[in-house]
Each structure stands twice: as C-alpha cells, then as structure tokens.
Length: 540
Image 1 (cartoon, rainbow, N blue to C red):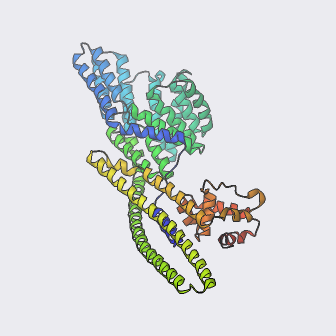
Image 2 (image 1 turned 180 degrees about the vertical axis):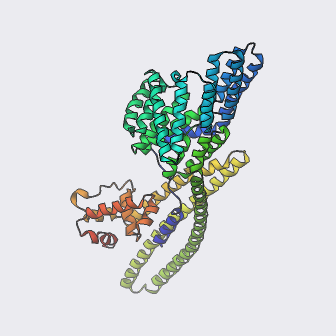
Image 3 (image 1 turned 45 degrees about the vertical axis):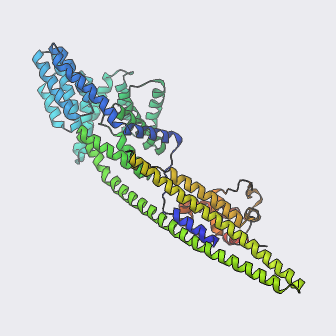
C-alpha cells in the first residue's frame, strides 16, 4: 500500500517539464531584458515625446540652416526606429540642402538616404544615387562604410558563386579603404577590425580585443548593442553558448532602451534559447523581434526574423499544449488519489475495530489458559504496532494531499484576485514558484518516507561498497542525495532509467552515469549489484 502511494505521487509530477537553468549572471541579464521588454510602452512613449518636440521646432525655425538642423535631429531620432520616416526626412534634408546651395549639407543628406536604402535592400538605388551626386566620395568614411555594407549583403544573398566572389572582392576593397581612413581610437575602426576577424574565424582574437576595451571604456548606449552583439557572436563561434546568451541579452537590452528596432541580437538570442529548449522565452523574444522589424520596416531584419519564427512558434504551441495536458492529468490523478485514500481510511478503521473486537474476545475466552493468553497478547501487540505504522503513513499521505489541495485553492484564489484586480493572469500562470515548492516538499516527503520504510538502508548499502566509496550520511538530516534517490527508486522496483530521470528531473544520461558509478564502486559483481540493492531491508 505504501509503494502504491509513492507511485501515485510520482505520476502527479512525471508530466511536468523541468525549468531551464542558467548561471546567476545569465539569469540576471535575462531578467533585466524581460523588464525592459515589459516597459516597452514607457520607453516608446519617451521616444515619441522627443520626436513631437522636434517636430514642433520645424515651424519655429527661422532659417534654412536651422530647419536643416531640426530635420537632421528628427532623422537621428527615427534612425533604426522607423526606416520610412528616416527616408522621408533624408529627402527633406536633400531638398533643403540643394535649395540652400550648400554642397556639404547635400553630401550629408545623400549619405543619410543611402544608409537607409542599404537597410531596405535597395542596393541599385544606392549606386544610382551615388552616380547622380558625383562627388569625390572616396575619402568619405560613411560612403565607404555604406558600400562595404552593400557588397557584404549582396555576397551573402547571391546564389551565383562567381557573382558572390565578385561582391566579396568589392566588399574587401571598400573595407580596407574604410579601415585606412579611420583613426585607431575611432569606435568605427574597432567595428571594422572585429568584422574582419570574424570573417576569418578569429573569434578569440575578437574577444582579446573587445573585452579589455569594454573594461576600460564606457561606450554610449547606442554603441553598446553593436559591441555586445559582436562579443556574443565571437563566444558563439568558439562554442561558449553560456556567454553568447549573456552578451546577446545585454546587447538586446541596450538596443531596446535606445530604442532602436533594427537589430539582430534579440532574434539571435531567441535562436539560442530555442536550442536550449527555453521555448517560452524564445517565443517571447522572437515575437517582439518580428513586431519591431515590421514597425521599423527594415527588410533585412524582417527576413532574418521570419526565418526562425515558424519553428519557434510551432514548438511553443506544442509546449503550451503539453503543459496544459500535464496540469489536467495531475489534477485528475490528485482527485483519484484523494478518493482512494478516503476509501482506504474507512477500510482501515473497520479493520482496526475488527482487530480490537477479536482481541477482546480472545482475552475473555482464554482467561483460564495463561500461557496461551500471553502468546495471544504478543500477537495483539504486534497487530497494534502494525496498525500504528499504517496510521502514521496514512496520516502523512493524507496531510500531503491536504496541503496540495490547500495549495491549489490558494493558487486559484490568487489567480481570481489577479483577474479581479485587472492584473495579467498569464504572468501568474507562468510563475514556477508553486511547482518548485511542491516538488521540493515532495522530495522531502519521499526521503523521509523511504528512510522510515528502510531505516538501515544506508548502513546495508555501505556493506556493498568499497571502503573508499562508502556513503557518509547524517541521520538527523533525513535527506538523500540524487545518487541515493536513484538507488532508493531501484529498491522500490523502479529500474527504468527513463522513469527515474523523469522523477528526479535529470537527464537519462545523468541517471545512467550514476548507476554505472555505483556499480563500479561495489565490492560484489557489477551485474549483481542492483539485485543486492533489492535485498536491502529483507535481512532481519
């Protein structure tokens, strides 16, 4: 009966998936990013207020130069925020600069328009634009940077190998010219150097360059996104996925605080989390990334986001479906277990009353036979002791079920209160606190119950182990390690590694390694070790 209760509790939890775990630093970075995402309306509101103030300055400008400056400020505010608006203000800058006859302003406005054309994938338009305004562009760093971007993107999108190689040569030509025009302490020089290193798979050299630079400099918020994204790419190339997630999260946070919506960090982060099976976060991030790409109307970023969106969305739908099924199954099993325990309680009470009646009749019938009376008294004492043990375990499982039902009621009450107060109920549903506490309490109950069932388990186990492999255990703690829980489940007859892994929230390979480790530590034959474990508690 005790084994049946244990197995029933295992069934309650076997459908619940384990939470993806990260280092404390990565978890802090992800929570900080989540907070920024939740404050989207506030951050965008501040951005829109700045834009409204600048628009008001257009009508109050008293000269063409002053009006050009306002258009330039509006262009910078919309830069990487809304590509259509930036193109619109770039055109206005060109018209005003041409009207004023200021060639320097015309060059600046043309380069602004070409930069935005590059993000829209309008490469032919860029080349036509530079032909139309035939200046001595070659010494202009922004001109070289734009053409470097154009030919880099063309080489990646071309399906013609010969044409792709041609674009790569052009890209390298403009890249080298750009590098020669920039000063060593210019942040643009850092960007070009890291791009060249990454193209040549020299990721470690990128980290050797950027890590000291970031430690000794305080880059502006607008530059942090690019710098941190480059570091994340480098970590990803050397296989350090933990640090890649960390720096992608920092980069995405910086981008969204600006805010700018032409980025790559957030959907690259979503891809990394998807590969780690953190489906909920991956879905949240890719959804936000697609929304921002659509809002900014940046064609390149739309394309990148749309590539991974269907994969993550499909996995998320399956995840939600499985999670809902697991919750329903857990509730059904809990109700069944409660009903079963009620029936069991009634049965045990009747059995106890029957034993007491039999005991009383036996004493009355055998008053004349003292020896037989003594023997019957011993039997009665054994029955009473057995009955007390049954009551103890029955009480423990009744108490656990009662606490679980109370917990469900409190959880339901909190959800109802959240909905009543107008709060986001989905946030409460996503919280793992309730399940984590229930899981911890369950493991504690499992350990205590098992040690009550087999109080000599540890000592008899040590008899099977080599001297230097014996288990050190303090009986006051009444808690088992994960390795001991694996053996405890084997003792209870659960020898399937898949079921053990599901029960303990470990991978199947981890459980397998634990079993191999304990077999290797035994003094008996390795193949017979788990059979000897099954004999623990049967020796008198």
